[in-house]
Length: 485
Length: 95
Image (cartoon, rainbow over all chains, first blue to last red; front, side, top):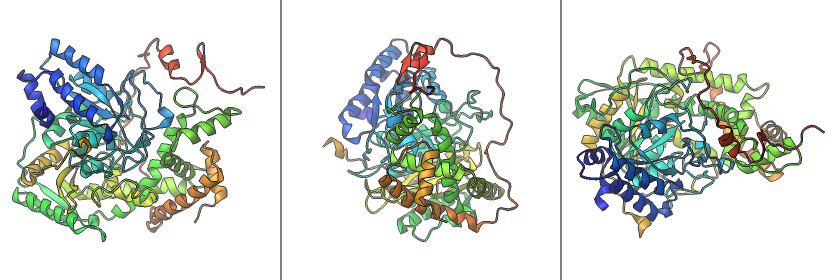
């Protein structure tokens, strides 16, 4: 069975279509390995028995026209799944069973995929190390007591550990790209408005986007075309022609203009990351791309602006958790007391911190100084990208300022934790698409990623550049199955 | 500017999150370090910049006001921590 889990998504789809493998054989292989891998703590809720039944159903009347025929997929526990508990990694949603399905997951099932289970994540997707989940830390398959990144940490670990062929995450400030970078996998945050937000537990609505996490660029292209759809149930969904990203994947990037922003060169950047970036530039040149130095002058203001906008939106979105209609309730002497105790006991420290920041910046007398100011800075950041894209087709940067760190290394200092997202946050503020691809290992043997940022709705272009770079980089993830020993 | 303990308690009230003194002190420290970091924005002159409230600057789409999910009362109530017949139950609010 060991070879099934080594196959990527595109290969699995081919094998099913050629009837060389059944959905049940594939599903069973991933279920078996998932069951042996409890130490990683990636699943909050599994759906293994149902998944095997669904696979049998698929095999009894297979439809090979589907894009993901009988393919088992585990998803981040931020996507609402009908009749299966959805927690967002929080105690306050510990017992919540959605009566409806998110559009993105519905798109997966409509294309033939089978739900394997719900994956651990930072509470309400607030975190960069998967250490804020009510359901405990996730271990990285890269090394023991190493964080997988966050907030889609369970997704990244499950994918890198081969417990699911591909997975999906959400990205508000880097929550797909940073864990992808930490675990040697591919992660793409689509343009805001590409993938419907309907049925995704909301964090910061003007920044949240769902996206694919895969082991290579081809799988990423295929999964994106299934996830992306125009949806009237999401008022910010954008109607545009979705590509057949996989079919149109093209490694020829001759003549493409790629920008290198000088503001992403930081004082404390490890030499390894600088070298990796230089290698990336060389590969692009070898492929006939033109490298152009450019400036995104407002980059240093992105993270401070994000830590106003995101908590402000979060404090509004999370106001609904009051212990009345669903979720956890604590008993109180009266209604207000019940609200206050429910929210105090139901939310973890990081979530409470962000609700408090958000409440403060939106409170009377501070709105202009903080929230309005941050929205103005957001405009400046978007303008920087608009200017840059008059000269270039895409931008290349590192994905993260460091490789993965140890569990508990950064939990006492929120600002140092926030700095993890310094290269990914500006992209969410500007609503642009960006992909992180694995580009090498540091001297500790931990993966490092490069990020390709595109113009709005130009996912095909960044996938093509990533595809071309993937062929040159020839990255191989080193997973020694430490948790099975 | 810095956030004092009184302000932390005021925000906790607005947020409907009860806080004991120990937690409030820890939050005071955390919030001050975060706001110190945020204050970098004051370096920028934004007096002539228009705020960006949404990245999708198109008109919001209207859809027909139709009932799409019917007979889901039971499913909805099933998630409630406390319900009685067709109602959500909360602590008494009217004496």
